[in-house]
Each structure stands twice: as C-alpha cells, then as structure tokens.
Image 1 (cartoon, rainbow, N blue to C red):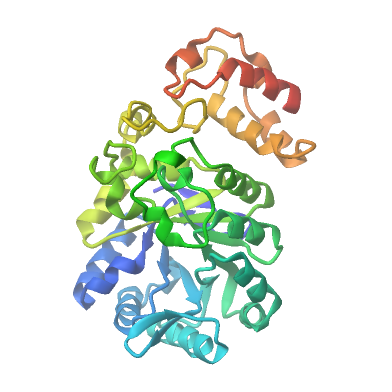
Image 2: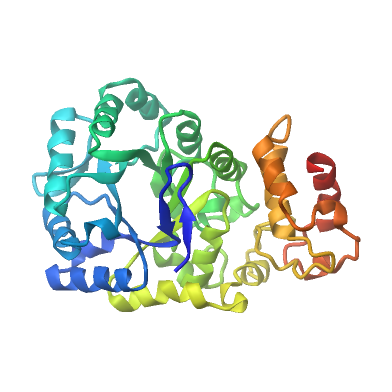
Length: 380
C-alpha cells in the first residue's frame, strides 16, 4: 500500500481507503470481515458519516483494540431521528449525535472532524459565521478532533472551504463523469441521464478546485469514485463505455491534491478488487484510451495527467510538468512552492527537443510541445 500526505495535516493516509456507507447493510461479523481485510492490506483511513446506530457500533467493535491503526473521518451534522438519517445544523441534535459517534466507535477522539454535506454557498457562510463552526473549533481545542474538514459535492463550496483558512481538508466527489458537470447545489443532478450538453471536458470549476487545494495545502479524500457503480456498465455510463474499479481509482488519484479514494465495500472481495490497484499494470490503470475512444467523447485537447505521453527521450515527466503548469497558470505569478517542485524535477520543460512522440501517444490530442514551451517560460 502506498501512502500520501493529506494536505498540511501531517497525516499520511493510504491512497485506497474505506468509505463506510455500504457497511450499513451488514451485521457485526460481516462488518468485521471487511474491516479486517482492509487492515490486512494496509488501508488506514475510514469515513463514517452514517448516523444509523448499529453500523457505528459494528465499526467500533471491528476496530476495538486497534484504534491507533485507523485515521477516522467522523461527521458533525449527521443525526438519527425517528429511525432515519437527518442532516441538521440544529445544535441540540448535532452535539448528542457526535457524542454518540465517539461512544459507539469506542474512541475519545476523531482524526478528521467533518462538517457534514455542505452543498449550498449560503449555508456554507451560515456555518462558518455561526455556532456550528464555533462548536467544531471547540472540539479541536479540546483535542476531541485533530483536524477540521468538510464534505461537499459542490466545487464552488469546496473552493470557499479551501480558501477559508479554517478547513484543512475536504471530502469531495470525483470521477470522470462528475468532473464534466458544472457546480450545483442539488447533488441529484449529478446522476442525471442526459450528459450531452456537458461532454466538454473537465469543468473549469472542478479543475480550479483541485488547483486551489493543491496550492493551499488542503488535502482531498474522494467519495463517489465509482459514481455509484454507473461507470462499470456501458449502458449506464454517460460515455457509452464501461470502466473498471482500477481505472476509476487511477483517475481520482491523478487529480491534484487528492490523497485517498474512499471506496465502498460490501465484502472482502470488493476490498481486494480495489487494492489490486496497488499492483496493477499501467495497461490496467489506463482510463485514457477508454475515454478517448468512447462513443461520447469528452476530453479532447485536455491533459488529464494520465501519463500516456511517456516515455520522453529527454527524460521529462510530462504529466507532472503539465500539472505544475496548470497549477501555476491560474495565478498572476507562479507560486514559489510550484517553482520549487518544478526546479526539483530531473528534467524541465526547457529540455524538450520537440520530437513530437508525446503528441502521437496522447489519446486526447493535447498540444504537448506548445505546453512545454509555455511551461518553460512560466516556470523556468
């Protein structure tokens, strides 16, 4: 298992994580089997947003005596009322629900205290200016949570969070289909059947979010990496082709600032399907050729950092140079941190010999040589 820095939190998280939602379907023994399997493969981060009491207790039993092996994302604002999940900002409901989470998980602290499910910009401002954030910050001051995070499906809210100075990491929905969509305050639109008007490549709002998070040191953990399984079927995929779990995982992990993708698992076999990524070949990871030859083509001319341009005879890590160029070009001046990363590369854009091999290999028709010239001017 490979591990990544989660922004500036100081935490190193497994790049494959555990999203706990599917565990609601299972009994104590089945939950333990999944969590034990995750642990055996080196997975060390789990997200528990669910308010249902039994799943919280079952997770707690599964990690009993092994709490120090897990980095836990626990949510503020996810409550259980009258036998069902209710998202709320009412503090008389929020506080006991969070205390219940601690109790059922059998822990006295949560590593990542998540402000739960904020998709409306107006609500974001209410939270950040009111008693909700004050309570979360109080828990951090007491050591009950170690870091403050937020979960959102809206890239505009994500950008506000990343620039706030209060939010240290975000849980965000990332997959090749969602990346096509504009910001929305209604997550149900992300499962719309008609993508025809959105097949124009990565939406600028989402690309900007990833770049801002990278620049600000705000780490991203990924939810909905499989788009609820829709991407596994050509019939339900907006591209008209099926992707594999490994391809979806690779797509998410190649976005800037992403530290871990939190997949949902029904069984230990699902865990093994995901961690197979760690030993997968480049061919197995290859989402780019699949998307490039899809009936509904979406990414023409856009660098997705897939690495198909390699190998470069001049030794340039073209995907990394493109990523650093994209991160720097949104600023009036290239940030010193980006320049430092660029200068640490063994070969820079200025070393490009314009052989054109990279462009022949690029499945999306990216003008690589022109981008190397621009990168050399901006970062050199």
